[in-house]
Picture (cartoon, helix red, strand yellow):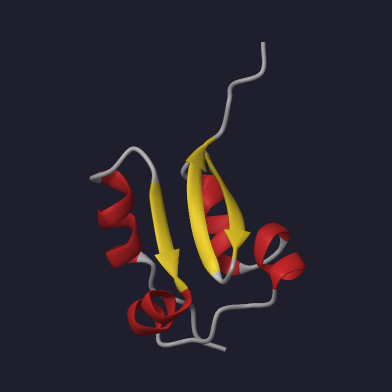
Length: 73
């Protein structure tokens, strides 16, 4: 399976402190359907992408919200 291009999403994230993405926006930007909730949050390509940027994701009513992870002390 081909890699998903998250470059457009990355541009949006970098221009905002908090960022949300609807299911339709995700599909339009990636060309793929949004994964199911449990897989989406922990194992999906978008979860791994967010983790690499120091972000966590939450899903509420088919909307992904990217939030900065708190640094552990």
